[in-house]
Image (cartoon, rainbow, N blue to C red):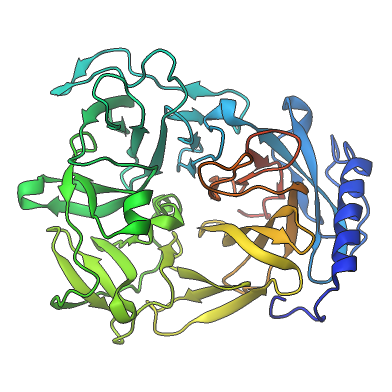
Amino acid sequence: MMSGHKGASIPRVVIRSVLITLIILTQLFAGCLAGDDSPIDSTGPYDWSAGFAYIDDPLTHEDARDFVVGDIFANETWGNSSWAVFGNEHGGNCCEHYLAATKEGWIVNFGGEYPTWTEDRGHTWQEWQPTVLAQFGCLNPKPTVPGQEGLGEGSIVQATNGDLISMGWFPYPSTSGADQFYAFLYDAEDEEWKWCYNRPPEAFYDRSWQVEVVGPISGGIYGSGPWASIVISNFWHQVANRGGQISTDGLNYQNFEFPDRDANLGLETVDLEFSDLGEEWDFTKPHKEMRAFPVPSGGLYFPSYFDGGIDAYLDVNLNWFAAETTNGSSLPSEYCSFDSSGALHCVKREGLIITHQLSWDGGENWENQTYNMSGIAADIEEWEFHTNGMHDLFVLNVRYQSADGPDVDVAWHVRDYSQSLEPDHMTFLGQGDLDSTSGAGNDIRFDFASMGILPDGGAFIAYHDSTDPDPLFGVELLLPKPQVGN
């Protein structure tokens, strides 16, 4: 269980009854929130929704659903929270969504073939497809061919200057007999999309992860620019140290070697202590499977990259170093990121236990919060986290296999994490009634967790239940009221 919560392991029969009760409650409470700042009376130890209001009217969304709120460790349900729900027609595919937020308030999704986004919390959506075959010095063959539409997938993240760096991977083109890699760039200054075909030196094989290297970059043979973009294949990342692709203009990529895990490189001390970063730092976190995070003073940090848990650092000249923090330490997890407050968040999973660690001094001292799923989960299948310093908000999303079999999607909100890392409440996303597995060949797939937090503080999170054959994602509609004076 989480630190700060009382109680022993919950027997399987109790878990089964809790899940059944939650599904029933979801149906009973449907529609109770619409048009009212005060949801149903709390059934928990306090009114979790006090001080909350709708930032967006559920009745104006085509598919708004009420998700049960409570505390799984205390076996309590407290009420409902309304979320707008969207499917793969809003940028996903059969098996996943690749979600991100921008500082302008966009929700972007590159789970499917082309970049898709909404600028108004999901009321209207846009998709960008290239209409010309040559631009920006690139000769661009058409990404898709007849009969193979919908088979592409991509990655996307906002850079600190507001650009959107992204790639599309098309695995089945008929012209070349090999997979194809297309760079998609949203130029924030020009306010337009650009694209370029890039042929990797060898097959890419799987969806990418993507991250910004904070500049200005002087990368020698790799070029120079305000930032660099690194893309790695999920396949390369998991089965071998195969490096990735790098670009200093977001369009033209070239092969980029990573050091061997046992390499003996020079040591660089990297200062990770920051405060009051710009709001853009709430939107630069890549998907956690990139296993790296941008450094505000420049470069890119890879926790626990080398053998023995030694960190790696890529500097603004695109040179690799072994790394340590100013107190001579390595970071406690592969999965870390900054937000605008300057807080350094690291999250690690050990079996059925997930631990959130926070440092305000660049990794010298840490505060910890533990989420212990023992006795509740048979396995943790997927998880992801995001933070927002402007809202002092941490959100952890976990998809776990319950002891009885079905997968359950949950999200913990930690509001005012600067005061306490203990969660305020937990939301059950969907019905928790579907058993799915990641990986090709499985009939029901949910390949990875994905989420983000909007500038208004609303989370959006992917989940999957029996109401749709493909994964869904929800956008939070019920948020804390602005405080007087803010």
